[in-house]
Length: 212
Image (cartoon, rainbow, N blue to C red; front, side, top):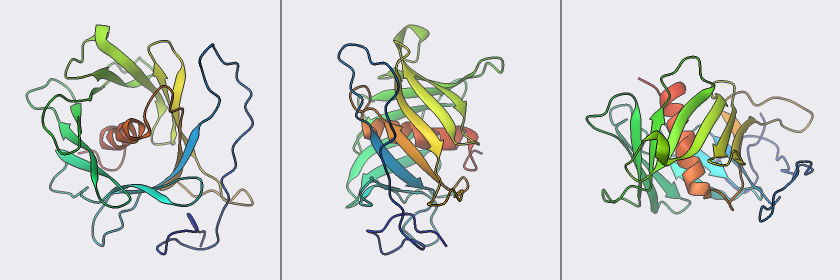
């Protein structure tokens, strides 16, 4: 089988290299072409637990989700490689539609983000992301478009700049990994990597195998 990344004892097969793709897009003033490329494995490090394991381009573990349990989908904890809590994702109570709040650490005060699933079937938008607990259209920070089931999503900011992408990953020789191993590409100047990972987790809740 193919190895996801070389620096982890729990990987599966031969190592692959993660090369930076050539930069072809035009940049506006103040933008940077440097991106962070993460490999996302839809698998927990814990036995009998669903979740995510995320590696950087060097093969080092950077994020993990181990509490993605069947009976506790209303709260999800994003941790760093050592298991320290980074963000807590909670389903928004008493809300119309599928809405979630993203908090710093394990706090329940002053959410960083509010993410709401789009209900317009004619729109190409999958979800709207706003700051704090205000999900009004006037407060939108990001819009997510594409197809999560195909692992082909783009996150745009309020100026329509591409700030993150979800893409399929190919091993050496062009062999596809399928949908359980894919890439998260982040432009940190416009969104933090942990926020981008939180959006990915919520796309899986809304449109992936983890949805109710």
